[in-house]
Length: 149
Image (cartoon, rainbow, N blue to C red; front, top):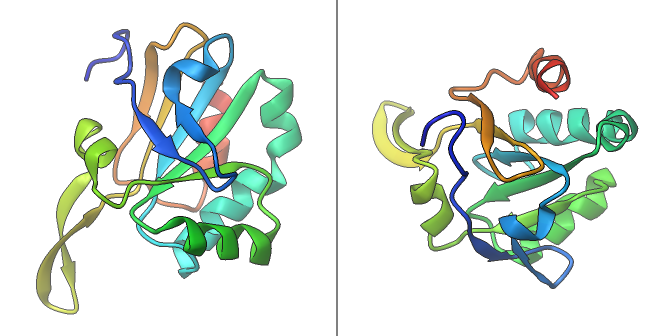
């Protein structure tokens, strides 16, 4: 994946019960963010930062799509608990995670495990990748995303 190239298309089920394809969003910018797990501190902060800035995001002709390996039931509880105004997509089989190369070896309590490395991709109205953020630190990330839009 390179900046300026078409972002890999995909089809995943969303928290709204519908299938979502990246190509469905042509004509809008897409903030595609991958996060490790629903209802964990960093992921909650990140989701709430997107929620709290949703009007500005919408005004910039952009949509937010979050992806994790959690199932739709988990996503729906997360959305309900924090009143998230955007769709979360379930990638239980890690197909899209692999497409975007976000599965990395992590150190959890001294044990090496494979998991999602927090990453955000900004895709333009024509489906081209215009910005990527890897190894995202949640604090200050929303400002980076907004300035990239």
